[in-house]
Image (cartoon, rainbow, N blue to C red):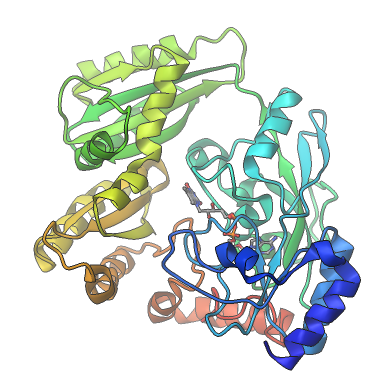
Length: 472
Ligand SMILES: Cc1cc2nc3c(=O)[nH]c(=O)nc-3n(C[C@H](O)[C@H](O)[C@H](O)COP(=O)(O)OP(=O)(O)OC[C@H]3O[C@@H](n4cnc5c(N)ncnc54)[C@H](O)[C@@H]3O)c2cc1C
């Protein structure tokens, strides 16, 4: 621990009390590695403020002592953005004690949640007042509102409701000089220049600490239908989406699953069963919902899938007959990464290209990767309707245990080059963090890099907010 860190921790104890300062290495350990367990950092303490004023006091102390802070929520991020540097130069600032829902109202259709509120807790609170916060994802039991805003998270319902950018009505944040930006007014119109709220969304903790967020709610779901369809190609899957979108506004989830991923889930995840009796090369999980009581969304989806079958867009389909079966279909989708992990070494790429280009890109990129790196299996699954696929490359069955370390960087460069040549993004929803920093620097257009660096320098001239993340 440096002298500056020791001074900061002692001063923080005065502000936060014993509850807000963790120095026991056993308690710190789970919070200094990333969710995938690939990046390991160090921090002499975890500081855990319980109010915006306490956050501001800690940020001012960090500026005074020139000690970097690493904001952290649930530590479920996929780019190691919340993992401190390995040299222990930073200190983790946990927002998990800031876990109050300050206000929630069906009339205003808004909830104001502190940064440490867990997503699932917000879901329940909205449900209790007959409303819904429509963003959801696999880590909902542990990821926090502050982390979701700071990574501009997406998830499985983006098709209808957008990413966090669309769902955040305002942000309260502590800026790197310790001043508080109060954006929780819920104003629908506010044209006083640059939107600080939007700047903080997706900033990965590099421009300030998100303390609370005003979130847009929508009416609760009155009915939902979940279906599984078999298709011959990703092109046909996109045809199906367009076919449905032209006829109904109820589709909010549309997830592509290759047969290979389905087989891995069936092999490794107990209790899972193939939804269709026939084998198809590609599959789509469809969720349709309505907020109108009395609307038979299941009958509508069944009718539309029947018409798609008649027109040869899909090869087979089944509608979940119960909530249990609907959940079983979603479990398959949500278990793909877990099944891959059990199967062996996998390289994950969270990429996007224009929606209409994704089917062809996916097929051609997978073929190119398999040709260039013989033995690997490349494929993609996920949010086809958003042009966002989790493009994963699995090691050959005979690969060496250090395949990931030896081959990973070369394969990722190859994939990222293909994505960039297609006009796409090497990070669709997971952010840059530290894992994608070098590739971001290599491939980002100069204008984007210049603007990012200039904003960072202007707001955080001392470099105390999550250095080494997002901004190369
Ligand atoms: C099983 C699983 C499924 C997932 N599925 C999806 C998915 O479908 N779509 C998707 O977009 N993401 C997905 N994710 C990743 C997703 O980004 C995170 O779950 C979530 O957004 C991060 O929340 P967190 O509280 O865990 O943040 P953390 O991991 O703690 O932090 C993430 C980043 O935000 C910063 N940060 C955290 N809190 C604050 C704050 N209060 N102020 C400023 N900065 C802060 C951190 O410094 C870090 O840079 C998934 C993750 C898992 C484990």
